[in-house]
Length: 237
Image: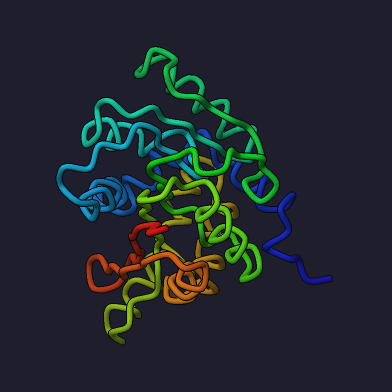
C-alpha cells in the first residue's frame, strides 16, 4: 500500500525524527540560504509595521524567531507545531535565547483553536510543502480568520525552479545531496522525504490562489531563481 505522505501522523513522525538535526542539515546543505530566505521573508513586509502579536505557523524549533525579533523587537510571538520533537527543541530554544517569552503550542494547525482576529502578523517558513491541497485551503481560511483587520502575513517554501537548468541542478541537490548530509546524522530516509514533498508542492502559486479566494490581498514572491517561492499580503477587511 502506497504511503499517504500527507497523512498528519506520518508527517508528524517524519519531522519529529528530524527535529534534532533539521536546522543544522538545512543550513549546511543549503549553503546558508535557508537562513537567508527566512530573513528575506520578513523583508517583504512594509517598513514601519509594528505587529503587537505574531503567529508562527509550523514553527519547527523556532528558526524564524530571531529574524522576527530583529525586525519587530516588541512583538509577542505565539508558535505552533504538531511535532513533539520539534516542540521539545523549540522549548529549549525559547528558554536559552528568548527567556521563555515565546508562547509555544504543541498542536496540529489544522485542528488548532486559535482566537479570531487576534494576530497582527502570521508567518510561516517552510511548512506548506507537507500539506495536501485541501489542507492548504484550510490554512488560508485560518490565516484570514485569526488576522486582525489590516493584519499582514508572509509565507515561504522551497520550490521547483521554472528554468530547466536550475531545476535540474536543484532537483539533484535536494534529491541526492541533502539526504547524503542527512545520512551523516543518521536520517537519510527522512531527509529524502523533503524531495517528495517539494516535488509534489512545485511552487506557491496554488497557495496564492487559495489565499486570494479568502479575500486576502496577496503578492507572490520568488527567491534565487525560484528555488523558493512564497507570498505576502494583507487582510483588508
